[in-house]
Length: 64
Image (cartoon, rainbow, N blue to C red; front, side, top):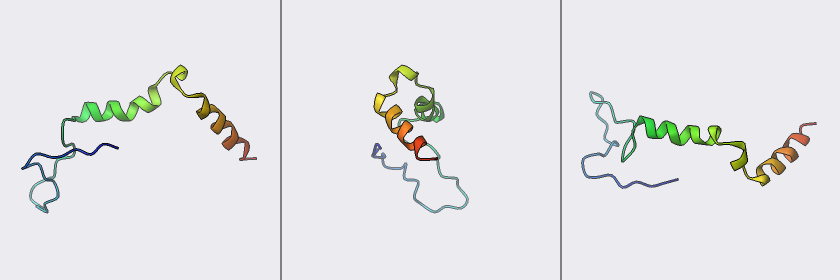
């Protein structure tokens, strides 16, 4: 997980009911957040580590 230091004035911890806090802070926008989340699911099978398949096989064999 990455920690981002916010410039002064982008603090979203203030409680102002009349103003909505920003959802995405820092250098990200909605598209970059979507890319980071979807990259895990959409990566090609050849990039999946072999250990993932080994552990997936062990865990599914424990299901019965």
